[in-house]
Image (cartoon, rainbow, N blue to C red; front, side, top):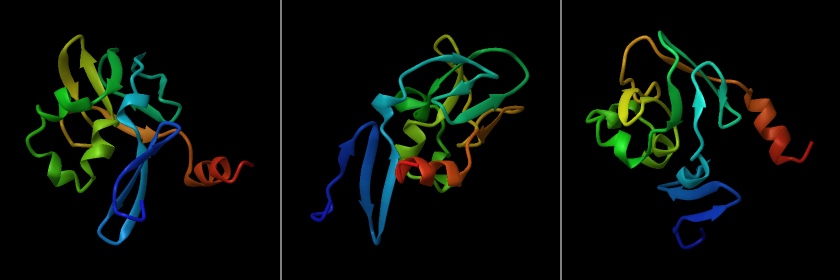
Length: 120
């Protein structure tokens, strides 16, 4: 990290970007699938018009979102972000603004995150 290179640690990707240090979910650690309405990756509650599967957006999904840079989020964040799929067809990627009628809301607060990091 001191040399400006990324590192991984227990499912997290540690990044140094310009003058900031980022801890983001490692895409490989967000490789599970759940039904919409359930809590995905222990963090995200997704809701929308139909019950479909939720999994990480990944490279495949990001390629289908040409305006992903407009989200203002780093690419590694989006790769591990929740997306709604109908088998191999991307239906929505709420953090990218792709798809209508879907939302992704953090199930836990910032305080929960900091308490977990502090071991409380």
